[in-house]
Length: 269
Image: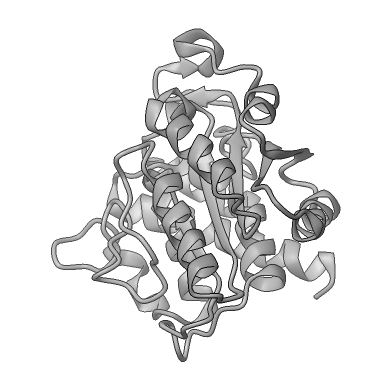
């Protein structure tokens, strides 16, 4: 798939994200929009998944550790055919499979229920370790937020992944330097991210998280590394694609009003 095709898919995902959150009148647009490009490359170029057989034994696994960015994952799963786009207006509604955080019991394609920050990497470790034990060749991918790195369990999981040499595991850090209370560097500075993971014996790659060539190249490099897990520190823009949401912590967890919704959809044509 050509890069311009991937970019077109990502723009469509961003439209669906904005529409879901607008109709729900609640949700997390900023961190959902910032990972749309990464998810597009994962699901349309990198991962082996089949919407007709979502429990295929040797499928690749994806864990959205920053579970509040669920609208981004839902947009992907609907676009890929795991679920109908008729669900878009049901985000966060009672009995909807599109809950505020991903629920593996409600929506095909969701590999792990997430939401309590800091836990996703541990779950991804378990999946990757299982593949090693049972000699399966699937790969496991996860996305963490940079604010999420303030959780201590992340670093226990990082130590575990390196100890078990989980070279079938790739973790992305969505490094947009914003969390609900403001700049990550002001709330609880997690820098230097790359050096920390290097100290935990991970293979570390830093990229522009909106540059498709860099995302693709990083994933190719990760496949070639043996004996250690890979972390891709992706420098991103919170709210990417919608001008008034970009780099705006106020849209970490706030839905657009009607005028903002119309402007966002116009920008994402």
